[in-house]
Length: 300
Ligand code: HSE
Image 1 (cartoon, rainbow, N blue to C red):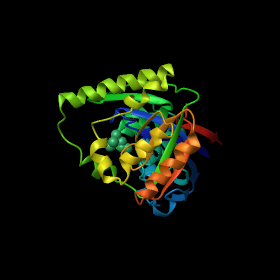
Image 2: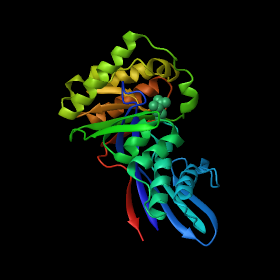
Image 3: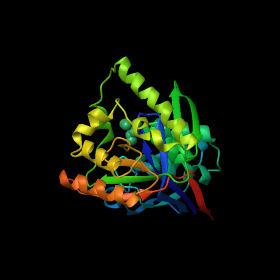
Image 4: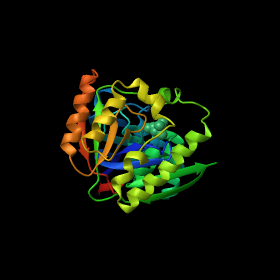
């Protein structure tokens, strides 16, 4: 039996649209074992009721790609999923399924894929590297892929940093929400974002959280997506007032992530209450950034 644990991720991370993502200590677990024939898929936890249990299951589809590449044909496969990452909330649940399937299948078929091949394959399935890369590598990952050529850097995050995440009780479809984004941006907005990405990465690397208020701002996607989430701007302001250093949409939303080094409970309570005042029920989580990405917990 092979058991792989994959962290949740906060993609985009402020100004880093499609290129920056952070792994969080909240995990989905994928277990693979061989059976005499067919596929059997069991799921528990977040979204378990809605997950397909047939060949269209994302973990299974990811695994099949690996088996095909490795020329490996298991007689039958049992997949057990134990999910803690909320589905469709901007916390990387599909990236974790893709990475979990690929990593478990790679181990099962003789570990023939390199890290680079795993990342490339996962990105070709998921489309957006900013969830895939931290789910696989952990930490904060800066990632770019041009014409299939991938390049990344991973940095570790300050020890006292936590992510306070408010998770509304509704899902957003990333593909649909990308359709609301502009095809062209102004030079001013491009400069706004690239300056903040540089600030954010440097500040996190140095452990200087004082600039995160500015460094987490964005003009590429949040102004468009934020408008579809009731209370979005108010939650951001309230979290900042309660002591969060920087606040942004997590992934494509609707979750909001506040980076903080103190007042975690207060920030969480204020975010939940401000969402409630806007008519949205949200739960909150206080999460530590995960320095490690996907890892095998058990191989028998
Ligand atoms: N960068 C992607 C987007 C992340 O914002 O659409 C999706 O989770």
